[in-house]
Image 1 (cartoon, rainbow, N blue to C red):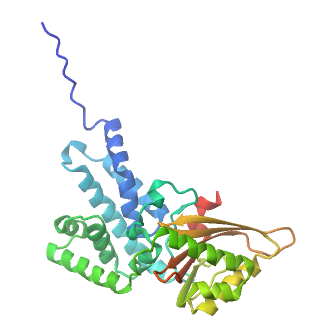
Image 2: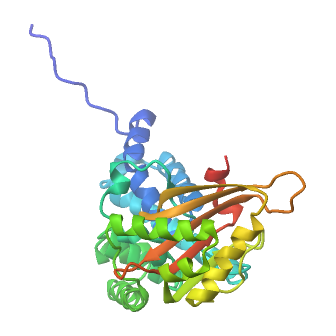
Length: 310
């Protein structure tokens, strides 16, 4: 009798198989959740909860695992957005997203900027309702069809279309210009850094657009401006004020890729006898096509910088 050499059927419900299937989707799900929540920590928490729900589910009954995980993760994000909305209204000073920082960029980081993770866009998304934000991220960024979007939001397909349309209009009315080439970003950021380190007020003003806006997020835990600062000279003086606060301390500056754009990571370590506030600041300049900085986001809240403090 000829031996049957066919590969035995794989048990789709086996824990190892389900875990491997989930791991193949994890990166995409974290990226989706981060765009919805603006927090890597929260995104990872939500994705972990999605995994727990999958582990408790009847895997063979799920026809399209990717769609199922997208729906579950998105619903969890929607619940979290609704829950944190009130707390963010009480947040001390401007709220900025948790930055994605790479100090040793690889091929993915030096490629064309992914507009959907730029800090400036994530700030705009904060102005949307939770439902609008989920609709925008799912449909406009990830291409989820309106039928599935309606299922996520628990509404009709017509209403899902309307939510996505309203979100799109709001984003278009406030979104920055597309990212400029990486070489232009690097040249401007280096000029900004050089002027800041040298205490060159005129040089700093020269690299800032007249209507530049600086937002500083300390979360009430460290020193930061409680309101946005507008105007080249005011912003320049604020930046130089930070330099003065660091006087007598060890200051290290690293050029990094932050949310797909060239930025800076400042490490301040107070020396003995100084009153300088130790910590890390992530600086995200928004460089325009004119070669000037039109926006500066400073993330100082240590709760958002844990990966850089380790």
